[in-house]
Image (spheres, rainbow, N blue to C red):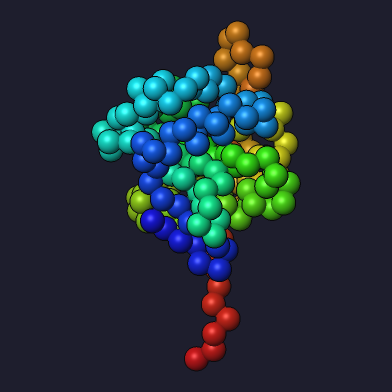
Length: 190
């Protein structure tokens, strides 16, 4: 588990008992707007995510906790491990991630920015010591996610719209050095 200290945010590996919670979050209206094709039930989620939960897939799944209470989900993977994502992103050495706040009562209160900052500094820097870039690809209509990423210094790059899709994703990237600027500073004197 990774703990973001004073931010009260921690990350723990998702486990099979968490799948019911994930199914609920992925089916919530505020999440469905941006994450398509949710698992319909726990059995489908178990089948879909079995390799990830067993550590046999490059995607790592995490439960986000605030003061010990599960509130959201994040996942990460090396971009090169997904051919479609690698073509879209075109950044060698990048790590991609997705995130969501599962509880609608926590939307719009600044949790997203704190959560993603903590995830970048406390999980991704250590998990991917050779990563040159960190990348998220939100739907271009997702103003809240774009605002979170913008506050953290992510640069919007190419827009990607696949044939037949009614939406476009925006590749947002932050160099590893940009993540280091997000690390909490110490106010202690020598």
